[in-house]
Image (cartoon, rainbow, N blue to C red; front, side, top):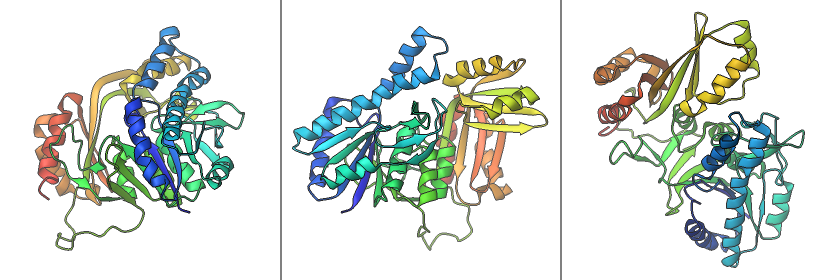
Length: 392
């Protein structure tokens, strides 16, 4: 019996109608004999609403109590999907993250998975049941409920696929797969049928919202086959490959090729003197940041603006004062092999981006990252895609 792990994101389970449609599509696969493990996120906007309730009561809610509150969202989704499958005549059972053995460290709000001990899933699969798991959550070694941070349901799914030795992990979302750029910005971007795991990881690190970087890290480390698909069509999407991908032999062999363009906007930059106090604060850091950079005694932290209140609170509680903040920034990142080793390619990028007030470039072996005011993000992504991807 093949085991398939399928993860459904918040927009995929955003209403009871969508949940019923998913259950109906899954019924055909269930009768084919595969063992199905379904990982679900909270219904769309539920987590934001729960955050709003918490911050409506406390400016700085306890992270432990916040985890207790936020995990309710996924429990709602898993129960509703279980009920919908039962209506299709399918035997199934739902588990929370703790019930299915996802063991984490004690960092509330951004916990890391230490191990998976999902023997209960094996037991229920052996009985012919579909197993539904609440993503985004686990239980710490101190038996406290924890959440895995942004993109945690993706991480839950790939971690379970690894433990179960699943044949495949499918990530269902509201797009058809991985595109060469955000379809909301670029009209008719290319759908990538395959993408290497290292390139996918780079896209995730640089703002791609299709899959979280921690999930790709799991896939790379343990060789899990991951496919990103549409929850509305269930059609083939984008395979993340851990082995060599066949390229078009007509391509110029050493031409720098941009695989895709990612971006991240709504960023705030913190500039902080790197003192002993700051070093101590970093060793106990638990809040998510997008990027960081240390140069000449000044630490820069780039974080989504929604995290600013909590970052301010952490810094001030550690006695760190005098830091500055720059708002409304973005990174636009071109991803492809060898891009950061070619000054001529950087020159072409900067020529395209002349109108967009680029403030800094960061080059790695697989990317060229451009920092600029967030007001230019759409124009920059569109222009760069046209120059380096559209007709290539």
